[in-house]
Amino acid sequence: MNQKKLRLNSSMRWAGIVRFNMVFLALAGSLCATAQPLKREAREDSIFLHTVHTEALVRGHSYQDLRSLCKTVGHRLSGSPQAAMAVRWGQIVLAGYGFDTVYLQPVAVPHWERGTPEVCWMNTGNGAVEKLSVLALGGSPPTDGLLEADVVYLASLKALDNLPEGGLKGKIAFFDEAFDPAQRSTFRAYGACAAQRFEGSVRAAALGASGVVIRSLASGIDDHPHTGVMSTEGDLVPAAALSTLDANRLRDALQAGNVVLSLQLNCRTLIDAASFNVIAELWGDKGRASDVISFGGHLDSWDVGEGAHDDGAGVVHSIEALRLLKVLGYRPKHTLRCVLFMNEENGNFGGKTYARWVHERGERHVAALESDRGGFLPLGFDAVGTEAQVRWLQSMGPRFSGFGLHEFKKGYGGVDIGPLLEFYPEMLQLGLSINSQRYFDHHHAETDVFESVNQRELELGCAALASMVYLVDRRYAR
Ligand SMILES: [Zn+2]
Image (cartoon, rainbow, N blue to C red):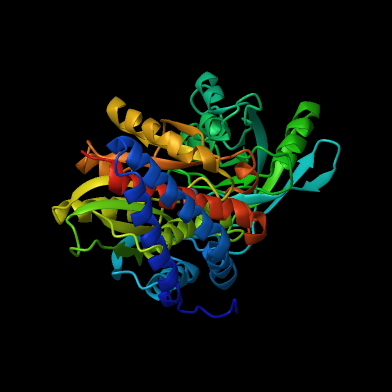
C-alpha cells in the first residue's frame, strides 16, 4: 500500500465470502435443530467466532490501516494539524468500507503545544555537567528561558505531606516514585504512581517550588522519557518527565551531594480548537435501530512517537471489528456504532461530548466497549456493571476458549466510554484486556511506533473485539 496516500477500500469482493458464511451458519443451525436452545446458540457462536478469527487473520485490514495511520498521519495531539488529518484519515477509511453511515461529531478540544525541544542538564557538586532526557508534561507552562534551581528529592507525592509551608521555595521538586516490579498488573503499577505526574505541579507550586521533574511512568529502565497529562486546575509550575535511566542518575547524584538542574521548556497553551469524533454505523435488516451498542478507541495521541499502541491499535481494532462483521454478512439487532474518539489524552472531551449527544438524542444505549490498552495479545474482557452483568460476561468466556482468551472479570471499561455511565448507569461496559507487560515501555514515548506492534497480536485483538460485539448484540439481553 502506498503509505503517502489514503485510499478508499471496497468490501464488494467479500460478497462470495459473505454468501459462504451465511450458508454455513444456516447449515449449522439446521444440524442442531434438535439440541437444547442454549447448546445451539453456543454452537452457532462457536462457528461464527471461528469465521471471524479466520477472516481477521487471513484477510485482515488492521495492520495496513495501522501502518497508514502511523506513517501517513503520525502522532496527533488534540488541536494539532496531525489530529485534523487523523480525523480526515478516519473518515476516508470508514467511508471506504461502505458502512451504512459515516459522520463527524464536533468536539471542542484543548490545544497545547510542546514548542521547540526541551533541554535539561544536571550540575553536580564536583563541577560535572550531564545532559538529561526530558519531555514537558502536557499542559505545563513554559520556563520562560533557562530555569536553574536546587533539586529536592521526593520519594513520592506523599512526601510533600511532611514539608512545611513554603518548604519547596525556589526549588525544583523531583518526584521519583517507580513502578512496583512485584505488581503483576502494569496498569495497577501505573495507577499507583500516576498522581506524581497528574498532581505534582499543582502540589509543588502550592509549597513554593519553581519547577517539577518526575520519574517517567514506565516499567522499563531506558533513555526514553514518557509524557502525559497533568492537572491544570490551580497555580502551576513548569513540569517535565525524566527518562527512568536519567531519574536513576539524578537520584544517585543527589545521594552524593547537591544538584542544580538547568531546565528549559518552550511549551504553550492556546485557545481551544475545533475537532471531531469520527463515527460509523452498521445497521440491521430493518434499518437503523434506536438501541445502540458503541465500541471504539481514541484517535488522538501524545505528540511523540506515532501513537501506535496508544491508541492506534484501539482505533484499528474498532474499525476492523465493524468491517469483519460487515464482510461476514452479519446483520445486527442493534445499531453497531464504531466511534473514533478525539481528545482522550488531555481532557476526554470526545467521550464527554459523545455521551451527552446520545443522551440528548434519546437513544437507548445498551452497551459500550473500548480498546485502549495497546495492540499486544488479547487476554479477555473486563466488565463494568452489576454482578449479573459480570456473570453474563463470564458465561461468554467458554466461547473464547479456543481462541486463547481466558480473562473475563469485573474490571475497567475505558476512559472514552466512561462518561456514558452518567446517563446510562445500568448499561454494560466492557474493556478489551490486553497483555500489558510491554505496554509501558511505549506508552506516551517516542518508542510507540508502528514497528512496535505485531501483526498477529493486533489481528487477534480485532477478532476478539468483533466477536464480543457480536455476542453482546446477539446474546446480551437487558
Ligand atoms: Zn490511550
